[in-house]
Amino acid sequence: MAVVFLKGRQKLGTRRYLRALSWMVLLLSFISIIVMGSQAYSAFLTSNLPLVHPKDSDEPWQGDAPSIQTLAVTPDGVVYAGSFGMGLFRSLDRGHSWEALNRGLTDPFLLCLTVLPGHHVYAGTMRGGVYRLSLKGEEWESISQGLEDTEVKSFLVHAGQVYAGTGEGVHRWVESESHWEKTGVGLDQVLVPGLAMMDDGRLLAATSGKGLHHVQLGNIPQSKWIDSQSVFVDPRERLPHRYLRVIAVNQAQHIFLGTQDGGIFRSTDRGVSWSSLSRNLPNDSIRGIVPIDKDVVVATGKGVFRWKHDQQDWVEMNEGLTRLAIQSLTIAKTGDWYVGTSSGAFRSDDGGAHWQNISQGFGLQMSPKGPYE
Image 1 (cartoon, helix red, strand yellow):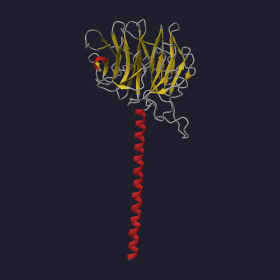
Image 2 (cartoon, one colour; image 1 turned 180 degrees about the vertical axis):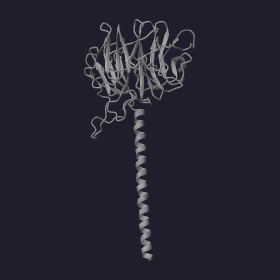
Image 3 (cartoon, helix red, strand yellow; image 1 turned 30 degrees about the vertical axis):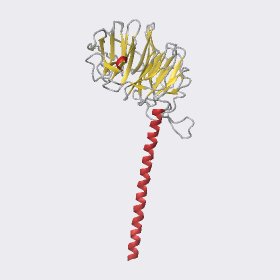
Image 4 (tube, one colour; image 1 turned 90 degrees about the vertical axis):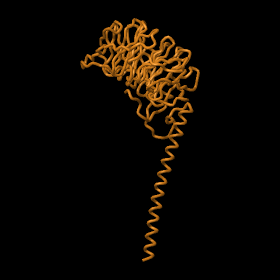
């Protein structure tokens, strides 16, 4: 009987030992994962290497190029591409090659870019506020002082001043004070995805949910934002739209306004009245607007289209685009056209007639590509 009892105790001890050993292995594995993740994130913060899987890896990864949410080009043709999740890339040769520039950029989810010629490129992020990078620099500087909300969705550079559309209205960067100050009063707790300036000093703000607003800039430090009370009615569904995404003004001071899912509208009388330009436009999700003389080029969820004023119709410009979920559209002063898509970027050398993929060098992204597809 004593022998049987002893064997039972030994068997029970062995089970406990094996169970404890299993838990220890799991704990060590968990700690290893945390350490590896921390090391990878630290590498992102301190180096120019993005969090990507190398192209020459033997691992069977099934990734895509990152979603390019925003593009900016300097007057001399240097291209900056902001991705959703992999930070910023810079190209000195029109997209033939790219280098990642992420030192100091603690939020790799970029939403907008702009260039202050001769000085800096500015980046608006999803959670980290605003960063800027010297045009000849290699490391980002955080400049988010004064922002009530850290989400920054749009920029406007006018007369040497940088304005930011954020989740708490519009702000202007004051260099002498190293601080963002609120522009106007009355536009709070609303995201501003688009900004534009009229030649009479009116700053236009396209908001997400509250329609179009404007404020008169001048000597009055805190002018009041005015709701335009404009009605943007989708001609297909006959529904009004106040969720706006992008705004642009041409040389004739015609205003073009893109909605999230209601198409594009135009005003030829400085915003007094509006008409829809969405007839025959295959997609109503407007992601970019670039006026060209009397024409206008738009980026949509299903490609790039140009409104031909002389034809009063839309012309498709998608030859060579293998990704039609366009996220951003930029036409550089050098004449090159660039689009960022849900997976990579493309360039056109002939005014949008043909496109070529310039995503080599971005690497692969294994996570969801973006919030605005």
